[in-house]
Image (cartoon, rainbow, N blue to C red; front, side, top):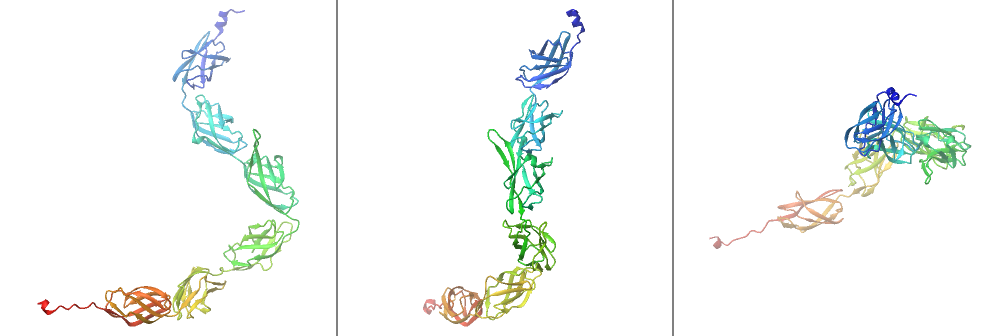
Length: 541
């Protein structure tokens, strides 16, 4: 057997090629791996001036537990019988941080590969999602990013925190990851026979997390869901229905069982069962509308579930009532004239609605406002009517045609002259080739006013005298003038008003203006000058 000195003679001087991690907390206690050669006979490891506890793993690797230190670089010295080797280690690593996640959301069942972007992530040993570890951690050599696969979690937003040799990354606005429940968008073919058996496609997101689907009252387990790997669509077999009409379809996900069951439930989508009996339709209401489309309609019949409606050959989206006795929709644009309206359903004959639907040029006239709303019985006043679809309109006042009627190019304004009429309100009617409509408010014919007397008939030139004017048809008075000067006035009744004279001179006419016309009482009022003051001649001298 060789002697101890012989054994030593065969040993080589140790080397250290790397230390990992190369930095750590000043409190020590973290594990560090030394990699090199000829480390089997290591007898001591000294960090700075402090001996460290170590374990020889192999000739190329030693693992040690770092003692406490002070911030800065220290030498880690390995000693063997044949010599020493050293490497630098830093107490006090830069603080690690997470600044953003990509993506920042994923399904509750986990499996999302997340890129964590930040700084000083070198040597990271774990990434947790709200405290729950992710899997498949891979750290980029730059220390600026890492990838990790998200675990399953309950719905909500959690902080993603990374454990590094320098410690745990602090919570930051950019480390939030949101877990979301599955969502159902629609059933691609949302109608089928009451017997079921059809294979339908369902679209959505995160469908791979569904535990089962509730189709009306029938549970379809996960094994019955053929979910695409993207989680955006799946196929399933429709179960037998219990009655014709719409039913709800929901997706259910079991999030956890303990300490109590937690479920995610999607918003419902609708599937409609149709009966074996074929649809029938007796009419469409209204049976006509503008060629521009946009007319809301109702089709009445029976067994209209899953019906396809075409107007003039154009398929129209419709909504069928739960009873299956009527459906609603909006007409598409079409050229003027009568078109065929059909109702179809698979495996049933096409139903043609009697009379179809007629497209006309414009909608019925819709007059809204008339200006003015009153005028003299003699007519002759210009008028204006605002509204829509007034093309080619004629206008009557109490059945009497208006004069010189014209319509602007937009079909929104009518102008013309009011015909003569009898005192009182009359209906104003607008008629176009598409129909007639009355204005909500009548037009009122007003008699022309007359004046019989004024009292008093004289007053001071300074004005301010209150006078009483009597006559007829004074209720609609709009102006009173003394000569050319307007006066403040108050209507007492249809036969009387009061006015306050403005300043003036001489003899003037009093004029009253109403919607029915103008009446002037000639030389009706005299302005009296102030009295002349006479001074005795002896006072003048």
